[in-house]
Image (cartoon, rainbow, N blue to C red; front, side, top):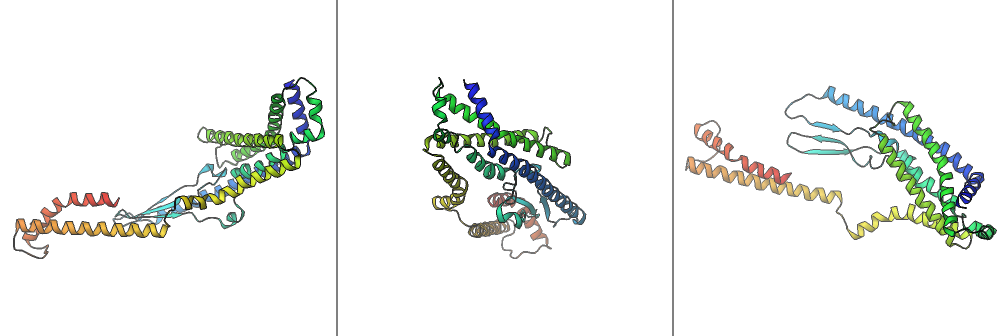
Length: 337
């Protein structure tokens, strides 16, 4: 009986108008997003290689040079840019240990509505489509009277629920996986990212598995609300409200709530305190070094004063000072680090 119910759900889902709308959206949006992402990655990689080459050609190795470390773009950014525009892009280091961090300049065009990458499609587009696909899976059958005919046979409720969940989910995955396969083949033949290589393909499988698990959870949510609601209209309204709260409201208010629960100092205040600590440690080091110098002078040549580097007396003091000052400098360098 379960097999009959499963086949019936698959057939009903395939002939449904929503399936063809979802298929059209997936086949058009997913490959297009990967095409744009590959073009963007190609441009970022070209810019990175040019910047590295310019640095190598223009820099002259000398004692006071500033070294630069440039972070290359990630090949898997074609799936999701993530925090790439927030993380350090370049680090400039001087010989005294001071460094400066630069972040990549964001693309203002993408900041308007967010980047249309694979992560955005799964989290925003496919999630709402999963809700549309399941909102009347049970409430609609109750309203149309189909359940009266179904339960006139020796059928368990869990068989009906399992058939609806598995059948609709499998049908929903067909356009999703087909579109993703087309997109991955397009990336592979572009030659920019060896997507099927042992280096990248395991990560692709992990992302695919997480995406499928996420969609499966939404299908469970849709069936639960549909079975609890008295009508399809109530079901879709409740599901849209849940989607808005989880997908739009919580991500926006989470930083505000976290700031209230655990406030963090601004970057300006933090850097100011850091500069003050560095200044205090530097003053302590200079004071201790000066004290050491005077102690060595008092031991070797009592009654002398001033610092003269040309005479024999101060050369002896300076030689002893250079030997004994090393532990002090190591201690304060450790404190500064």
